[in-house]
Length: 106
Image (cartoon, rainbow, N blue to C red):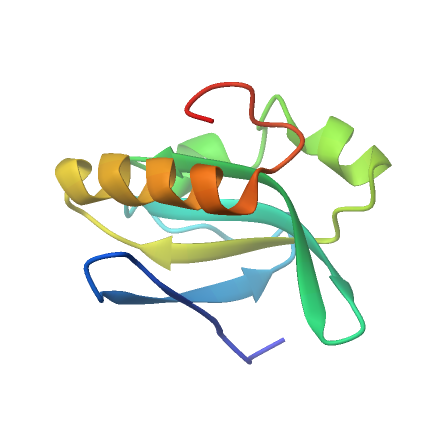
């Protein structure tokens, strides 16, 4: 799947999330990720998270099996090395999308 999913933050920054299978070869980069499923032309987002290393976090994520049971088919990911920006945008995404598996930052 090659089409990116665009999200615009409150400060006008546009992030382009790439939908990938959870079993992909993940890089050591840091960034934000969403667990989601495509319904028609709209992504349903079940979980929003961040990591400083995709390859350590995504393959064995503790919420993936639960997200998969709820219909998640992909991890949408964007590289974002700045911890400050990851914190800011993760909180914004959770507040905007209200994903069912996120219990904090709502």
